[in-house]
Image (cartoon, rainbow, N blue to C red):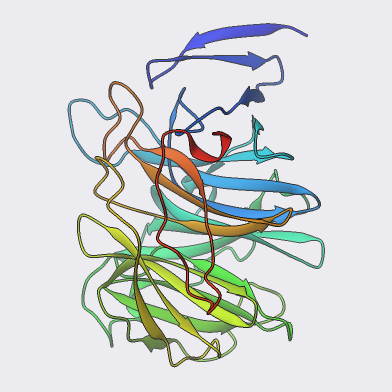
Length: 319
């Protein structure tokens, strides 16, 4: 197979196969050091972990987010990873004008739904769209031809134009799907079985210290709603016995992540172990809050269902 070694924006070298897939072995945090990736979301499917992340390009000299696409990583053993050649671009949604902010993928009935944050082309503010594919690595296409959530749908709760960001999706044991999202205000709504339409009203959730990046998961009968808090951001979390609440705030889960002002998490279980996937700005020498890096550390539950505070490490899960 023809191989090509390239110098990347992150200042390191990576080897690409001729089909443009990249396979590498992670030996510490960050797991990818040849390009900048942030806002990781993870899905476990058919014996693999898939990580979907925004690509932080190299803004120079401006210090701001430059994100035009999302990338896909996969692994069977949490050690050897493949970055797949396919990328989903914000402009693949014809009604969007760019800005590939946080996203998440979920599987239902053999199809894969990718919920994304983009800037709407005609409705001022951030919007949430959804793409669909028959494969977790694409290609994906716009499932609706229009946004699922637009800024004008939530002006009852806040007047800012960036509150409709950071979608997280969860399918409960009874088959009901839910979409959670928000900035400064957390929202949730039911989804129809087709995963592309709301199935009821948008409802606010009152969470102390909520900023953005909600993530919903379930473990041993408890629902967990984790989220980025304040700025610079920590990750905090709340618990409930019911997905509709009430939610009991449980405190800080992950501290400020290095030199990154933002913090964005995914929590999964894979082969009997729980993992906390997040980003910081630790790629040498140019990593920062606008050029982020994916990290993975173990997550542990206490006997009462609460979660131990995450220990962020350079060694990661490979120590």
